[in-house]
Image (cartoon, rainbow, N blue to C red; front, top):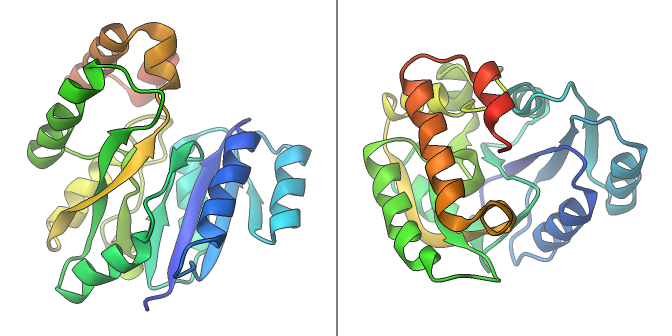
Length: 225
């Protein structure tokens, strides 16, 4: 198996982080190393990482900077970027290994809403899959990239939002960046709280404004409705 370095940016989400680390450590094929990059420099987060024997790094609260910091420290053949509040499929490393052995430079998992689900998920999930193929998959889909090509493509942008966009565009110029059949299960709490269609439209407005050239720092202020 390839050595896979997992990088998890976290900001005051310790309960879900602990759950994700437990999932990673229970996989049939385990990661080579796990980095948690803590944007809150939380003592609670540091203690969880110490108890679970994973690397804890303090960072400023900017997701792009957090991801860059973790990637700079990682030594695995492949970098795997995960949000703290996702649920993993049963054997993700085997799926990643398979496409890389076939020549892919990296890829991403299928977006699937975790429970509790609502009927709009049935419409939104295939729409998101289409958007990923003609646009850019986002960081909540478990992006993974061969480490040397991650750095060759320039790494994550040091932004608090849309930090993966120039990275994915750069990696696609270097080789095949594939969509896996396997899903990661995304926490639906924002959609539940804000309303499924309201949150979806809000996210699309942010993406449209980013495409128009609005600064990611400004858009990050609008991310929470």
